[in-house]
Image 1 (spheres, rainbow, N blue to C red):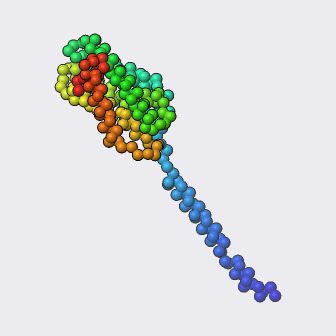
Image 2 (image 1 turned 45 degrees about the horizontal axis):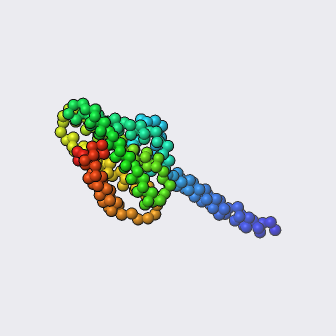
Image 3 (image 1 turned 180 degrees about the vertical axis):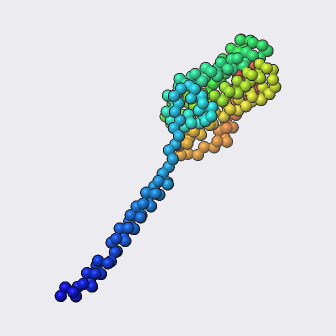
Length: 231
């Protein structure tokens, strides 16, 4: 009796459907692991600003990383030191005109400081009215001064040209003016990045140009305020 079931038993022993299914599932698991390793995103580089030197380095090469940092207000002290450095450079730049005239340098430094303050307040109210966000005046102060590292570099070149009586000094004054004038728009774009509404950047730039021209017109006869009198 047992022999008549042998062909059925042999059929069960030789069939390998379960083994094939098991082998197929293992192959799929290996492929999924390999795919996960391939599409794993690369970790972003973390910019660590731990000293005033590193602050100058990053603000000179990529000042937008400071503006994109929502907690950039913690660099307020570094931004203040950057402002002091800028005032010192423009003091010596103004004093170097026609020899060393400290009164002219002081007038140049005070006018630069007042204009920077007006620019910070103006930039703060632009983002406050347009975006209505929780960005503080401390963050705007730090973000504006982060772009002043480049302006300080251009002013230092002006100082070297002034000392050695070289030409093209006026060209650097125009470049510095254009860099400073673009700061409110640059920061507005950075602050606007996380907000979903349309903004006409052309009209905003036109508004900035009008306001800058008005500032130059009103301060052209006031030496302590006319910072861009050479433009």
